[in-house]
Length: 250
Ligand SMILES: [Zn+2]
Image 1 (cartoon, rainbow, N blue to C red):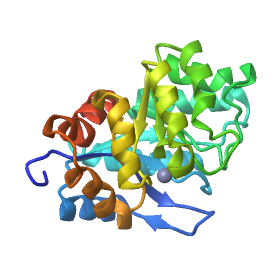
Image 2: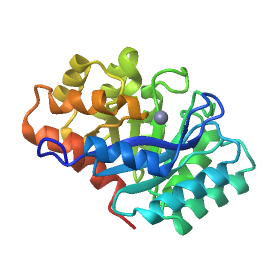
Image 3: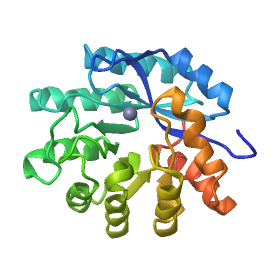
């Protein structure tokens, strides 16, 4: 709780990232959440890890220890054998109770408009997982508009555009959300005036906030807490949308 608002951080990571050298434990994440007043967070593996099963097990242990604070997400290189991919997604959903499957097209070159990528979205749909797609840097496959195709092909999936396409492509995220009722937008990395522009056109019931890294937590949340938005929209963006999309504790 911060300034009378419950906070759901829809984008955090724990584990060790091979590409950046970043490392964060579950307890460290909870410490940052406590210091700022974040009530709940979606915890996602870093996109490049030594062992994706271990990364998922680390998150599963943290979620199990703090089911009231943390929800889990899967993230793995999609071009392992399809059977292996589907089995790991099943394990994450059934055994760990994860709520989401993340795609990071900058490191996982899956073409969202190709039917060759259907297996990814099918695995999410079969396991009732929300798809969280990194958008912004990492084009072309991280362009927000490319996710209109799978959002239409799999209307039962809720699809979250992480970073809202970033400052360069945020209007694409607005277009994608406006033509697909199952597309949601996570607002991290945007300039405050970009956030206002998105919030003016996309219903707040489809907007959420994320920090990505602890040093961005204060900045990302302050954009909403201190922004020129109605209190109802702030409640939606800071808590309601993510809480309804990623559900309550298993
Ligand atoms: Zn991230």
